[in-house]
Image 1 (cartoon, helix red, strand yellow):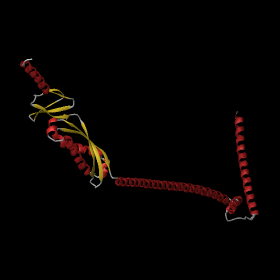
Image 2 (image 1 turned 180 degrees about the horizontal axis):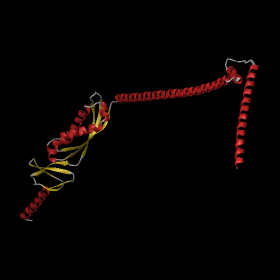
Image 3 (image 1 turned 45 degrees about the horizontal axis):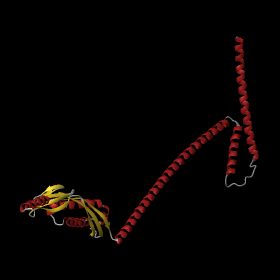
Image 4 (image 1 turned 45 degrees about the vertical axis):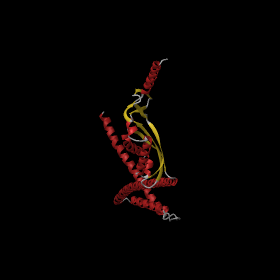
Length: 327
């Protein structure tokens, strides 16, 4: 081989090396920054890319996929001076490779420290009870604050989650006692409220019972008064009839009236709870005479009824004969 052939082969090899040095393959999910003499000029995306050999160079290789970063445990002092231990997790994604490469040094460390600082700020502005019960609110506030802080770096914070909030053991025990006391208080209040309602219902029931009892007594009194009124009317009517009989000179009516009252008096004496022994006959002859008077009254009444029926039958007989004679 002469010198020309060797030079030609060398040129071909050099051309191949130059060509390969100008070809850059970027994997999916990554972006590369291109620097020319140390100065950023552009960003190349996934696939086959060409650069100027020996002039342009790869600056930074950045992962454009969403990434997750653990936030380690740290102590946080709440607004009511309670110390808790909290950790979390941050999800972020690079949107602008140039800003992420040249606006901040050590990107992941910067995001981590910014997140930890804002966790202390947000959680430290809340009371312990609110801290333990409003975890979603903490996450939302952290997301807004951290995302606004990293936006100049070409990064988007997609989510920040607080994983664990661990109060000290003595504080947990105190909270347990407080919760127990609060539940016992609520139970006592509910029991007292139930007793009050029961007493009110009992009083209402007693009131209704008294009202119904009073109405019953009023109705019974009204009925008793009505019965006494009717009894008095009957007694007055009987007295009137006896008075009329006496006025007509009927002695038997007087005997009937006296015997009736006499027997009622004996009945009252016999029913008296203080009377244990009743001596008879207590003027038995008078009672028998009165009964005899009652018998005479009954005979006269029956005789009067028979006489009236005889007169009515005799008045019907001539009328019947007159009708048969006319025929």
